[in-house]
Length: 368
Image (cartoon, rainbow, N blue to C red; front, side):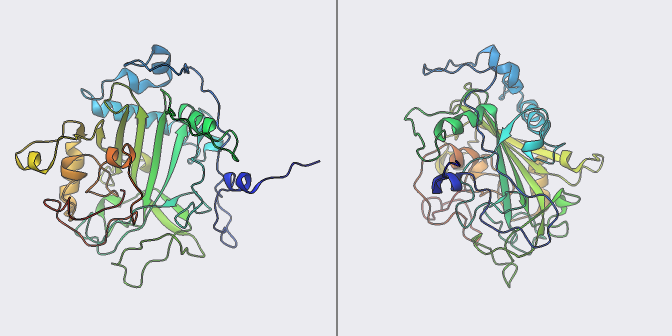
């Protein structure tokens, strides 16, 4: 006798609420949510974690052998190699990764901005016309998908052991060894953003453009009936590292089509930077006095790319902090992902480009 599936269980296992296009013969996204209860090589305890992770964690988390302040680029490269291993060969279908297990976050289908059916990417912050490059005449759509390794997925497994009754512990934390990365795609073409030349492409069910292509698409509710191409612009990552004052280290890479010597387009990536704190004392007065972020490292190569594109974007993140090319420049990695906040009225920055200085207290912006 078959067991009845509850509505919550059905939703928990739903990959997308949007239909696969008629006649489609390519990949179809299937959520991986068979979350583990434990990950190999990690000690679980309710005790306070030590300042430095134990050696058993660094064996499976090679970035923990590197000082992210002294060698941020080496740290970022090590995380990227870990994320690419097995996933690149499987075209980021985690069910086919032969090296290690990766998982998707649950319930990312359950909104108008939720997962589309072919690749599981979700509607993200659009890029207003002219923001990223002087040749960018159109507003760009952005779409993304995230992946969690075993250690990170353990937390999902603890919360969602019973999809009908999720457990929200007051001391719930992601475990040492956790690694998360996100692929972010855009509708940008080479003629609009020169650095996008030769970028990896996916087909996905995205939104139709506005009649005026310079106008921002602000919601993912209306989708095309056929696939469209999106191109890799950014790779975000985050790892638990208790040497960091916030317990995490964040980083982002941008696609760089100028790397013509690299035959694999998925390897044409330039690190934008690494971030391990929000520089909470770096207010506008401090910036005006000449202070710089001390908890973000910005790669000079990426900074030169940004300046060379000639867009209206004044920095990667707020007042010199780190954020990615598709992200909100009046935010930063840690302010988006590591701070509590109330729900913003809109997830996207208004289409109007603004000057940063003097407006932080006057204008409310959404997440990156």
